[in-house]
Length: 64
Length: 301
Ligand SMILES: [Zn+2]
Ligand SMILES: [Zn+2]
Image 1 (cartoon, protein in one colour):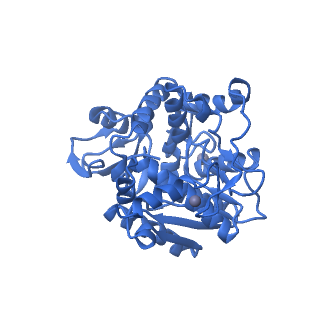
Image 2 (image 1 turned 120 degrees about the vertical axis):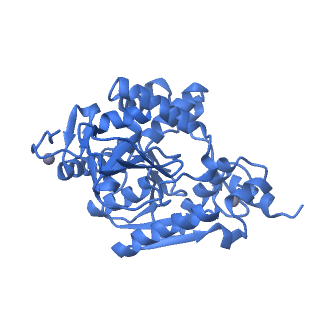
Image 3 (image 1 turned 90 degrees about the vertical axis):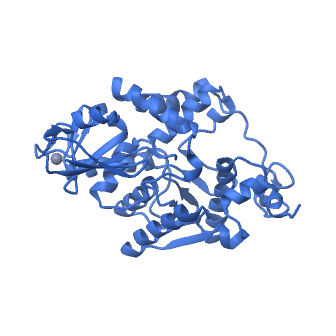
């Protein structure tokens, strides 16, 4: 699957299918600080992302 | 995962409530939280207009959107800080949001007013950038609110911002800052606009979810000046606690607000009897901090 990441903005690809929770763990991204968007919709951590999907992992922390 | 209320597929899991919500149920929950913050804090009513300070980031744009949905009369205020491409993009986001909804927006540009951006102003006056930026924002929010007849200025500070600030103040035991940390700051003699933070009950993850569900575009990248700021370390630490113990941030900050009166009695307010000789805003000395800053930055040495 293709994954869009921020800070810095970049794209990576990893093998699917994989549940959202394992993708975040795999990338070392804390759940409380990120949201996952697939097909323009938010997905919960039990959702399984297929190998041909494109997702975005959006950081939610800002400097304030 | 299913929505706890209506059993349709959930879009967000919220461990602190041990629940998950679908899109409509989540949005209903979120609007209720904001309405509750506004009414319990007696922040403002539907009788008077609210000036919403919008940076172009997720929190302030979500706040503006929510206030409109709740039926409040609002206008947006955007300060263009003059930080290169970042400020340009921020203003674009705010204008795009306001234009699409036909909302009133006031824009002021530091570059136009001073011929300098906030970074140059901070450098010229030998102040740390974020501290100079804060002084300037507070001055302009108050000035514009008073000039244009807005009794209240609302900002997008969220639960994570407030909890991180509290942690920072506690780590240094800055007790005098603790008593001033409140989602509502009002002034009895009407020299200042009231300052309110209607999103203080909501973690930023939920606010970001709201902007995504409502297709609100915002500037995701950070202000270049905030790189390495301590607030990120505080937020990271608090999020680790939150994952280990859901609801920790909420207990920490809302618990503080409850305990504040007993633990940190409010000292008599600092006298702000003077009027700044340059700008006329209330101050403790002859000239306010903002005017001293600008004088130093714009005086050719
Ligand atoms: Zn539902
Ligand atoms: Zn002044």
